[in-house]
Amino acid sequence: MSDARRVKSTVKYNNRDISHQIISIGYTDNTDNTDDISIKLSDRAEQLFSSWFPETGDTLTAKIELCHWISSDTTETMNCGLFEVDNVEMSDTVTINAVSVPITGSIRSEKKNKGWENINLSSILEEITGNAGLTLVYETDIDPYYDRIDQNNKSDLSFIEELCKSDGLCLKISDGQLIVFEESKYDTLAPVGEIIRGTSLISGVPKFKRNAKNIYTACEISFTDSKTDKTYKGSFNAPNVESVGHVLKLNESFNSESDDMDLERKAKARLREQNKKEWTADVSLRDGIIYYAGTNIELEGWYSFDGKYHIQSVSYNISSSGFTTNLSLRKCLEGY
Image (cartoon, rainbow, N blue to C red; front, side, top):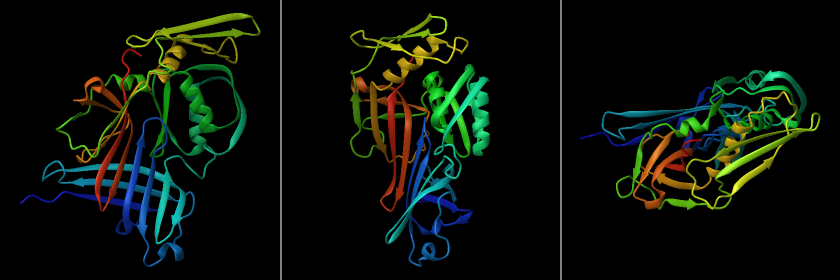
């Protein structure tokens, strides 16, 4: 007789194991954002009210194990990482909500004014992550140079998100790391699995959407330097876009002539940001397979919606009702 399927959750709060109090867990892994977790606890002994009431900035780690799910002798383990408590809700139970971005630091909340001169993006990120107590993981060869860039009344996180997005880079904070990467490269990776209609263990009915609004065949960017009256232009044409031929035309400003103004790269980034919203899907599963945001999966059996999709976010929900996985997907863009 094979062992029964089960889910084992291990949660430590300020290094104290509170796994025995767990009622349910909701964990979300995002591609281009911060991860978050919500844990509901029983508190019959009212320990949380008396001896260790959760405080903002307290740390929490979580691990999820799927035992005997795929076969009788396998266990899949997912380390969710390190989180800081964001808020606490109390009634007859206690719900602790936590995020992967440091709450106690200033990276997310404090607006700053600062000028940066003769510096690369990676160096700006190194300074900001160092101040926030994060480790920088820079997974790209794209490293724009600025002779001057100004952080005007923006938090560090908002500022670096804006810089990264300008050149088609994604930023993610997870498990004490700030990770910068090219989403376009991830789209080219082979699928890690497939979801087949009538075969896969789907929960409920998948939702599909094709959005034809604001989808473009090309992007054109122009910039006129007020100091020299010189105009710079860049453009990029999407290789495989079904549309009525609209062109995204943008007039943007940069700080100086000597900025790294690769306008073709920026045009590609703007076009990708718009066009990746065209084909999307939301699918819930109960197959017990661990998926990660940033990987790709193949959909089969849904006609025009078939193809390779990028996992933008994946949410896991664990409770007495079972274990479910919710995938937020968009179709991969090839060629840019």
